[in-house]
Amino acid sequence: MTIMDRVLTAGFRHNSKRLTKFDGLTPSETLPPPDTSRTYMLYLHIPFCVVLCPFCSFHRVCFKEDKAVKYFNSLRQEIRMAHEAGYRFGDIYVGGGTPTVMPRELAETLELVRKLSPIDSISVETNPDDLTPETMQIVRDAGVTRLSVGVQSLDNDLLKQMDRYEKYGSAENVMAGLERANGFFETLNADMIFNLPHQTDESLLRDVDLITRELEITQTTFYPLMSAESTMRKMLKMMGEVDFNREGHMYRLILDALPSNYTPSSAWCFNHKGDTTDEYVIENEEYLGLGSGSLSYLDGMLYSSTFSLNHYNRQIAAGKFGISRQQALTPRDRLRYFMLMNLFGLSLDKKVAEAKYPGFFRKLAPEILGLKIMGAVRDEGDKLVLTRYGMRVWILIMREFFMAVSDFRDLMRHAIKEELDAPGPLQIRVPTPELRPPGAY
Ligand code: SF4
Image (cartoon, rainbow, N blue to C red; front, top):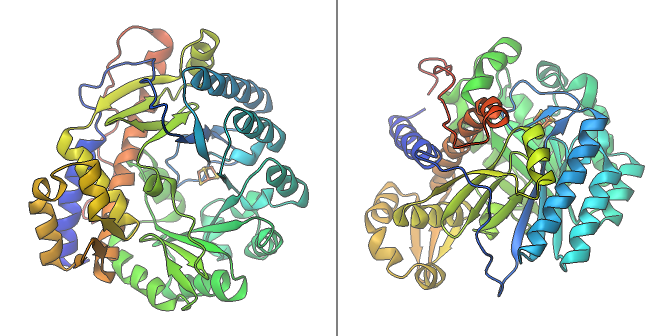
């Protein structure tokens, strides 16, 4: 890691933690009134997984059928409530957890949303063991246009260290599933991780090769390893120490190894032959999240739903939304968030930015000047464009941003008992000491 990388990491970590600290956050059970002249992106969270991977800091719990059936019922009820509140949706993103853990429940949920609003696209996350002909048929019939598969690696040793080999299959089985699914959906995305402990350059290059040259998957996303403070200890025990000094080197390896028919649509997402389905946070600045553990960003306000499944079910049964926290972004942070997400998608349209936030370039002049001096962005007339070096910088920024979100999830998990015990105003306590190994960055 270069000195510049260290300085940037420290700066962006501080800012990301500040943005996601939800300091002085207020309990909330209501949604703001929607802008009825537009549609929203709907995010649905399905928090069940059959195996809990050691590196993962998402909101997920062990799958139990009775719990999941009850949860899907609550989720459909919350969707109806959002519709009655005036929200209309254009696109759906279903994340988890493992959204396909009960495919028929998922299909019924998606069909409900489609009945309430005309939907353009539906993106669903899944795991390789769910790439069976039957499950794929159910989700495609439910309108899914993009299936995103958590592959993580095609190295059997690494899959074993991640505790994924037994449950989600060997690299050979995963590849057979991907082959079945490729072409079956408009877009098939393979989520990969780089900078895993013990991952060698050769192993990473082999992954790039198998995904892009051998399988020619329509889309692939290479995430840097990210974790929350709470998962560091488990990860350290099962997978070994993370060396963040290798991250920049490994990212450059990926960029150099990708075939020329793969083009980036964000700093970490690459599309075969120009398919340009992007991440929902880029194309949809605002979105509504429903389900336990979902986040929403609406009109400059961040909302978080309760992480307690029992509390969530109880709220919905009482006719209330699952939202339990809200925090306003400062006007400057709103601008920064807009710039962060747009440049993550590789360019910022100046006219769009000024129309949405008058005075945008004057107000963020210091930040933009800094990015230009660093060589992270360049001016291309009516656009600011991320350079190749800027893509590396954005990997670092997004890693810090999502790790701060993960730390916020830790806080919410620690608030579960309080939410169940005391339905009044809540305080979130800081739960864990700094578990990141010293000098990790
Ligand atoms: S990585 Fe995916 S399958 Fe593993 S625990 Fe996290 S959400 Fe579940």
